Length: 244
Image (cartoon, rainbow, N blue to C red):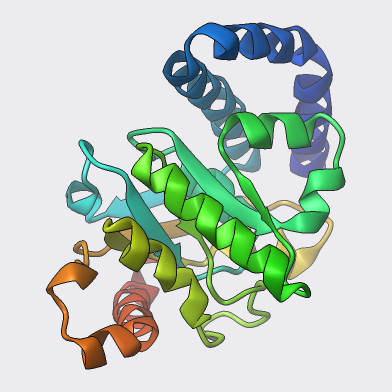
């Protein structure tokens, strides 16, 4: 329980102590939005790295050279843990927004930092609102902000289990004209979700696949893009199981 207390205590303390930083970021954003994006990235990266340090997570990263640093991309990953966000966000080379469930928008202070980081809130029950979120994500990428989404729609319950990828997620890459970077995450639920409320020292593996360019695909290939990306993530995932 000590790790849980350290992580939870730090998160609460950070959110309270960072209120003046939120105000400063708001002022910076009035004059220089790019500077605000990068400074918010640095601040939250510090917070996430501290949480990962307290959690005791040991991280092996593969294929990081596959992540473009000069253009925004759409990250697509499998999802089993809240720590998936911390593990991947601390490695992004440029401002990146995550698509989260809309209930996260109701969490005080946290929602401010999420908006500062260009995160979007998806209402999965309302098709019209969901489409608005997708369109906003497309505009974010066109403006230079990468987007990360876990297209299973919810966290899978068992290690090695994959839920179907929602096809709509891939419209972001198609309409924005950006590359898709697949992410395979191994053993992340062993940090927290597999033994709530304890946080345990765990070895996790993250692998970034080679970017996928939908603009080079035929129409039939584009229709199967969700299956193509899921197959690549599964390939990396099962290849890396023996490493954890």
